[in-house]
Picture 1 (tube, rainbow, N blue to C red):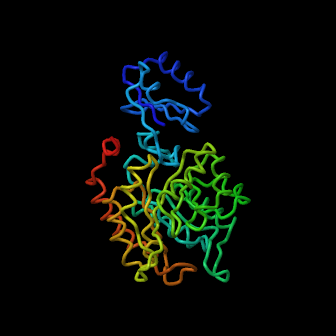
Picture 2: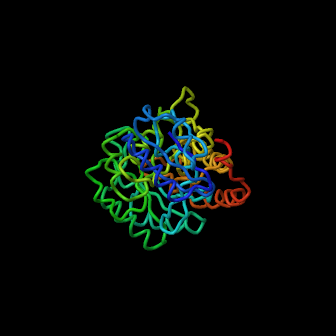
Picture 3: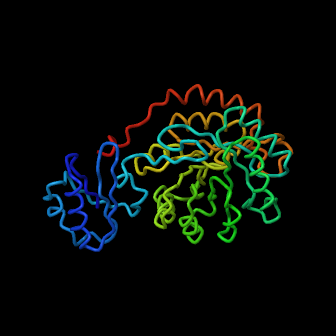
Length: 342
């Protein structure tokens, strides 16, 4: 249930209302947005009479929320979530670009690529230290050594680092990582999600290969229900009957997620297509669709990459792509999501 308060409501009136709602054994969350004051009720609200709530002097309107996700729901939190990641404002329409190799292979490989993507305009650095692979015989990542190399690359470039976690037991290794990524295969690893919900770090949550948007939002809810509201949702393609690309990039997810949730939305055109020639056009389309972040794979020598070389841009290709991204990103209008939902 969402209680929308009048702009003229006083602190005393709001306090009395919160005290009265507390009698119904529900959790109350007061949110003062840019244009509205809202009280979100989480729990069994069936015993609360909407008319009784609406009759309160400070209440403008009351709505029941049918969606099972509450913390991630834009109805409970009408303003966009904006988080600071290493001095980068993330969310709310200002585009950030995460770039770097699929896997951290060597110090030289990562540092060279990190310097190149920064020069091209990337604002964060990605690199896989732990790699979930379809084959158990494929390169699985350098583990802790990979994270150490990422931290060194951050010192060299100043770029915040983004890397994927696979197991909750490794969480302590991520103490100095700026953004913890949860891969598509772990989107519904609820034990891991709960652990990440108890840490105070941004989590980039990728959509599962066959997950619906509601399932993605429910996975975000697992993290947020434990207290961590710093969640970024990532569309990275879903599995369909079309074999021409690695996955099918669902760009309709970007505006739909913006309507449903206040959380930032990222798009990964590299994993979605698996084909280097498609990364740039899909990245540009994602920006036009209104994404808050892009995650693009870049390697200093893709032909000799230890993983996913076919989808990784060279630094030169990334530089050209960034010029086009920057040329259109400032002209993409910010949708009035609050207006859409009224």
